[in-house]
Structures are given as structure tokens and as C-alpha cells.
Length: 323
Ligand SMILES: NC(=O)c1ccc[n+]([C@@H]2O[C@H](COP(=O)([O-])OP(=O)(O)OC[C@H]3O[C@@H](n4cnc5c(N)ncnc54)[C@H](O)[C@@H]3O)[C@@H](O)[C@H]2O)c1
Image (cartoon, rainbow, N blue to C red; front, top):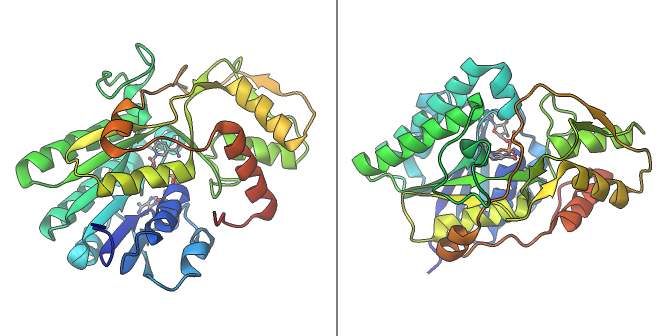
């Protein structure tokens, strides 16, 4: 049975990078209504262009803030399922820790309360691989200790603990997904807190050499944004409750290797420059994908070279991907 068909689904942060891809992926399941809830601090209406151009599902866009408890209470009244993506990210949380508490922690708690009060059937929400910090061993499985030292990671650890306790106290069905290094179309261009791919593509567009922090030996577990969206829908449809999953590719790519792929795909031939950096970057990342594969039926499908090519195409078109 397709439980999403005919339902009402709320996507917080639904105009952002991951949220808007979740909206696209959800459309395949034919819900009756999708409510996008976003304060548009980073999100863009353009990101919803593909979704708004189809006419089987009603899409309503609410411009509001997860810090506004009354709005969340009101919106959740007729909602069956929730995907929660609204959050500030790593670098902004470092610069503005109070905002990280207000948005990531209090805002998430506001949403959880509204879900419990209104009998929402299940919540799938964005945790982060940041909870693990520098790995003690590779690959990192879901039982790896929280070795996080960042403020952002601390907000995600806190939310995982709240989610777990609310499941036990109130039966709030929840799954937290620990995304690894997400990249792909619609990822913030020219934002103050832009991540690695958008930053490098901005530099290439300005014909400047790309900047690699430290020696480029740090590694990432890169996961394409459409894979992330698919993992979310699979998690909602699964029978699993009250659990946490790594969502990554299980493949380790160093910063230097990623730079080589990008230079190759774009044909840009200025060599990178290396700079020191003071933000606490995790040195290595590679997750175990076994649990997500076994319990959610999720495996990533887009490898790094293909994903970078898709991102480059989207940059050229500057329009949302439709496939
Ligand atoms: N991008 C990654 O590599 C990554 C990795 C791990 C976890 N995550 C998590 O995934 C989620 C989505 O991240 P993303 O990469 O799509 O980021 P994003 O910035 O593109 O999307 C976040 C969205 O939330 C909205 N938002 C921010 N604050 C809000 C508030 N107070 N009220 C309502 N809306 C608000 C923004 O406008 C934006 O549309 C976040 O929870 C993030 O912590 C992302």
C-alpha cells in the first residue's frame, strides 16, 4: 500500500536545497497536498518551479519560521506526515550559536510538539553526520560514539535525544537521517555560508583558481541530493520507528580528488591554490551504508563524477533539474 497517496505532507525548509528535492520526489507518490513551510532565509521559490509546474498535487507555500510555535500548531492540524529540513548549517551555527539554539533546537522542538499535539503519523527529519565528529574508525556505523566538537553538531545531537525521548513518552514516530556531504543542484550559490562545490564553481565562473583549505587530504562521503530525497521518502514509507540512519554513499573522496574531478568536468585548467583554514573540519568521512540498505532499502545511485556533471549542467542552465 502506498501510504503517502492522498495524504497531506508538510516539508519544513521545503524551498531549500534538500527540501525542494524531497518535494519533487514526493510528487511521485501522489499525495493530495504538500505544504512547504520556509522562512526563505536561504530557500527560493525557483527551487519549487518543477513541483509547481505539475497539477496532480496541491502545493501550498507558507512563508513562516519554525521559531513561530503558533504557526506550526496551526499548520500541523491536518497534516499526516512531516519532513523536517529547516535549519541553519555548520558555518552559520559557528558564527551565531544563539541562532543555532533558537532555530535548530527550539524550532525543532516546536515542530515536534506541534506534531504530537496534532497526531502527525510520522516525522522524518534531518540530523547530520556531524554528530560523529572525527571518526574513531572507518566506516562509521550508526553505533559510533558522538565525537562531535562543533556547535552545529551539538544542536543535532540534542535534537536526536529529544526525538528519542518524545517517541518513548508520546509515541512520536520519528526517523532521524544523518546526512553525509550533500551536494547537487539548487545548492546555495554565492551564499555567505556556501559549501565546497558552490564555492569552487563560483571561483571557476570568475576564472579564479579554486581554493583548497589545508593540504586537501581531508575526505568526504559525498552524496547526491536526489539520493538524499529518495532516502527520505523510503524512510517515511518504511515500518521503522524511532531510529537513526547514516545516509551517505559509503565512498571516501578526498578534497583533492574532488578538485581534480571538477577541473576535469569543467575543463578549467588553472591549478588550485592551498590556504590554511581555522574552521574545525572533520578529517575523514566514510559511512557504513549497511543499516540503511537493510532496513530502508536505500543505496546511493549517483557517483561523484556523474553528480558533479549534473551540478555543472544545472549551473550552466541555472534552472532546477527535472530528472
Ligand atoms: N547540506 C548538507 O551537506 C547537509 C548535511 C547534513 C545535514 N544537513 C541538514 O539537512 C537539512 C537541509 O539542509 P540544506 O542543505 O537543504 O540547507 P538549505 O539552507 O538549502 O535549506 C534549509 C532551508 O530551511 C529554511 N530555513 C532556515 N531557517 C528557517 C527557519 N527558522 N524557519 C523556517 N525555515 C527556515 C531555509 O530558508 C532553507 O530553505 C538541514 O537540517 C541541515 O542541517 C545538510
